[in-house]
Length: 114
Length: 159
Image 1 (tube, rainbow over the protein chains, first blue to last red):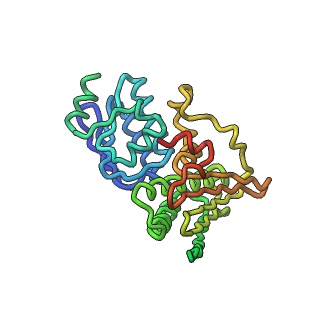
Image 2: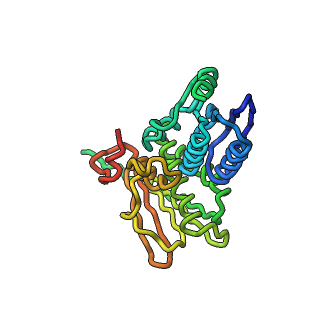
Image 3: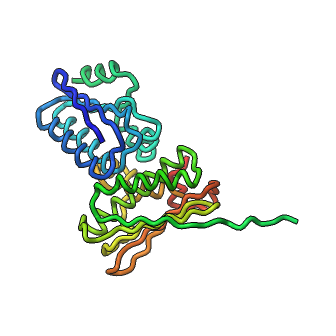
């Protein structure tokens, strides 16, 4: 799995590529924790190249969502594929996470609420 | 006279040491198995995630990430569907004690969705405990979905 980080203003966009499973979840969690610990206030997860993620990866996103919320920050998902949207629906996490299919809309969403 | 076609069955097995990095190897084998089954794209994704959840549970919770302990996978391919067995050497657990991750008090918890997803994505999920000798999960994905064959747990999560 590949992770590219694009820091912007007081936030970050994580461009993820590949299935977030196995030890890929550990690397994903480390990257997210590093970003949150560096005092960002928003995070956009670009899932356009992620065909699958397991429940541990979902747990990592929940953890990031809650930590940013504590800091009055925000996390949103961008370009989630159908398979990921289906898992969010099954687990009812679709009611927790905002999902966008437009980069500018995602950036507006994380900034407007701050 | 109608001839009943004899069902073709065969097994594919995979043993991996209990390290999460090997989940990517499991993923490659699953791609091959799903192709052999001629599953549609959605079914492939469902089986893929369910088996990855079972394998990850076996590595982490069953074998406690001990690389000297193996996780055994057996894929039984037949015309009717795919049956997958995942066996570890853990002390087992009580499946009836697993909390519902959809309940309001649990939906924000970062863990506890693995078995729920396995049940939601597969047609049948069964656990067998072998005392101190390990745990085996058996999962079935039917080639032609028959909702009547689904157990109660899996029915709940089907749309």
